Amino acid sequence: MKAPGLWAVSALSFIAGATVYWLFRSTEMVMFGALRRVSEPLFGRLTHIRALLADFTLPHWVAYNLPDGMWLLSLLCTVHAIWLGHSAVCRILAWSLTICAIASEALQYTGLLPGTADWLDVAAYTGASVIYMTLTNQITIPICKQKLSLRQS
Image (tube, rainbow, N blue to C red; front, top):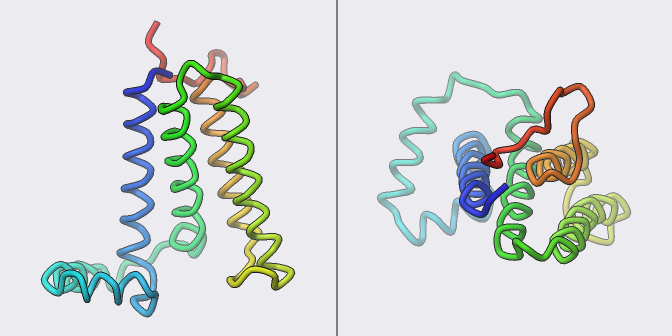
């Protein structure tokens, strides 16, 4: 995949993850307090949109795990776009970022890192890595007749 496609996937996955997070997560989280301090009008608009969606619920994993995977996908695509043409660096960074994300869940499980360990976060990180590797032609999904790629021929 060429850099423009990577930047597009990065932006879309970041925005989609952030949208789910802002609209369907608890307003008790620190970032909502920060938003209120930075921009009361923006916080008011967000609160209004959340009220309109009050009767709409997402599956738990979509609201709580999918954004993490989407943000990792965004980060992987951003790093790849920056280091495009340096395949060894891309692979090392992609594996390192994925391992760090999964290790953070393990450290949360042991209590060495604050947070709530969740195996669905590990699944989201793994899924993000598989999507990234498929988009960058590092792997091919066997059930597909062609590589899944946005690369132009």
